[in-house]
Length: 121
Image (cartoon, rainbow, N blue to C red; front, top):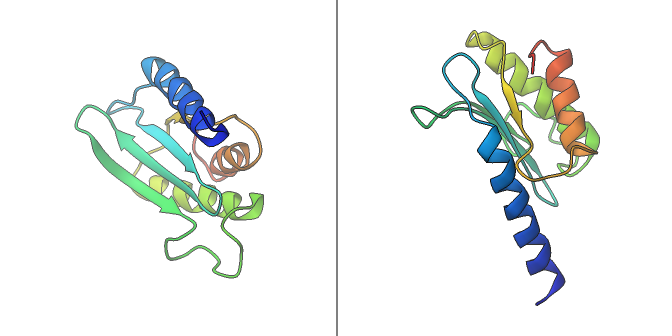
């Protein structure tokens, strides 16, 4: 088994373990983060109906296009933009889903920027 397949399967196990404990409801939707090598994506999901309420990523409009999508500064911009969109829809509290990724680097930067912009976890 090659290394990338092992990493992918290990992340999927972590993701399943986290999702057993973390679910979003109407009062506190789930903020889910996906990190790829080049970009970072975040969305706020209401799990009872399965709808995405707010989404932001480094490929969406409104994020600085001159920033590379795979670094900490871009993750901070996405977190700030996501929080602003959420507050505009009167979403103040969310539960954080790291989606099997380590809470470090870009994932942590996105969460911290969202907190600074007004979301509470």
